[in-house]
Every structure is written in C-alpha cells, then in structure tokens.
Image (tube, rainbow, N blue to C red; front, side, top):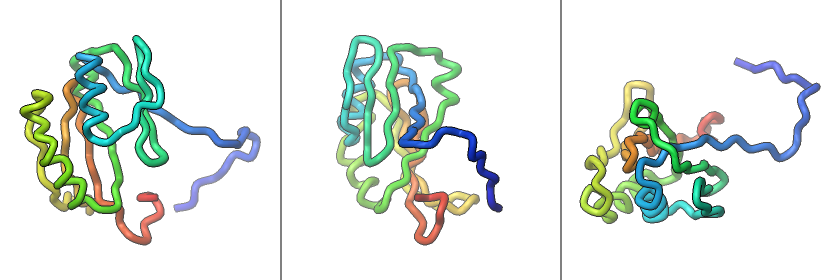
Amino acid sequence: MEMATNTSVPAGTEIARPFLPAKDFDLSKRFYQALGFTAVLDSDEVAIFRIGTSSFILQKYFQKEWAENFMMQLIVDDLDSWWNHVLALDLPEKFGVPAPKPPAVQPWGLRIAYVIDPSGVLWHVAQRRPNTAHDE
C-alpha cells in the first residue's frame, strides 16, 4: 500500500515525541536511565530521553487511566541481548514494577518482550525484522 504524499507540507528534520506520564517523576527518570535511555534535558517538569534516533518527553503529570492505557514500542536489533539486559536490572525489586514478560512471537508476527514502567506504561520491546520497511 503506497501512501499519498502532500507536497505542500513543509519538510525538514521534523521529529515526533510522545509525552509519557510519571506518577513519581524521579523514580521514572531513574528507571529510564537504568534501561539505557539518555536524558538530554532534565528540568523540574519534564525530561527528554533519547535512545538511538528516538526520544520521548517524560512529564511530571499522572492520570492513572491514561498511564495504564499508554503503550510504547521500542524496536531493537537484538531482542535476546535486550532481554538479558532487562533481567539483569531486577526492575521489580529496584523500581516496584511488575515482572517483565519474556520474548515471545505474537499473533501479529512480532517477537516481543514486555516491560511496564513505574507509572504503568507498557513497553513493547520488539525484535526488528529483516527486510521489513516499517521496522526501520
């Protein structure tokens, strides 16, 4: 399926960054740093975290219903290495989060491990598939 492009839209180096909730802002910042995200901005109300070419804005704002229905996807080159990294962090003990779920192939074809952050945000850590444009 080829998508139509609108040539009147300005194009440059745009990026889209989602805002993630933080019930305990400092705990969430430590959680993401432990996972391997780099804080590129850290202020009293927001922190911007980057990994690879992706980033998100962690905000000092929490709404339970929103946080527990929010999902993020992180596509990685080597899911097994990521899984070993996640296990070594002992996230439930250090951050009070549910135990991560090990990698498994999902009905839609992606191999995914699941990690829940301290606010309830569900991360899908997915194995990049070769020759799959939408995994790039």
